[in-house]
Length: 409
Ligand SMILES: NC(=O)CC[C@H](N)C(=O)O
Image 1: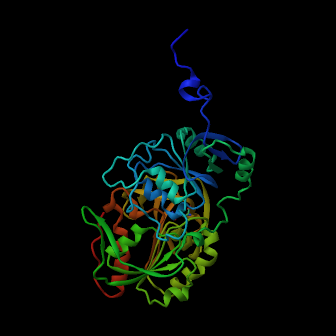
Image 2: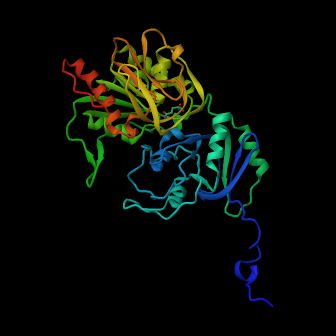
């Protein structure tokens, strides 16, 4: 006789069985990765990219630009500071979160942060985001670097019962992001005014009390912090839906127009956005674009965009300012890029990625028009990139004969 407790006594009859996978990531080529499910229950399809940021998972997972994508975080400890109600980038609360799912290395620990209101798992559930933990995210990232961003299904079933063949078929049948317009799914349903200013330690967000320039921001999937920085820079911001025509935009008699970031293929979204952007260019109104807005501005100016191999997603991307020779460390989230060779002679390439030489910024010679591929509102050294908002304001000041403000950074 032995006094060792049997498996049945302690844990039930399955005690010695292999732990059952409660989540799967099935790539379009059939590769199946098993793990533990967190967040929403069900399955979703999208393109898998990797994000190298070490902080800001809440902002990343609420960035509407991630619609149609599943994010693999290369940083292993995601969820450990919980979630709050402030670090949210989605403006349109009616649309589902852009991102389709997240892939993590380690299990979520209990939230450890004074700002945390709820745990990451519950937050993911509430936003309908499916997650899988216990994945060798280094291996998955290496695979993406080698083969490009795969389409995949992410699935979570607490009982571990999956129809693997059906999920695999869905992953391989998904057409992919090329040709996909997703801005219409995440954009605001109606126009609205924005007057919130950036978050300040111990005070929270503020309200704008005075503004100098009327700006129309076209929402292709805009982020709150972009709007806050426009407000802080003195813009009276009116947000319009992605489908706004040139006439809709110009009816506001704006001093400047901002073209936002957003999900999907710029060429597909550009089918309706580019004619509007061309109207704004023709009206000679100062223009500033970020990311998807930058890409569609590139198309409106006569250039082309192309799909990238692995894209740029993270908070540590070196970008060279070709005018000053300075390198900025930037936040990035894009899988398409402007093809610099396609830009006409009237357009100058102002910024270039030091990772792969891809285009990261442009300006039109002798016109108040510029845009960047990266996210200055989310870049790690804020002062390094916020000067772009001052640059936009300076274009509008020049129109009124006012001297330019000093650009920081
Ligand atoms: N953040 C963005 O605006 C992304 C733009 C575009 N959807 C891309 O993937 O390149």
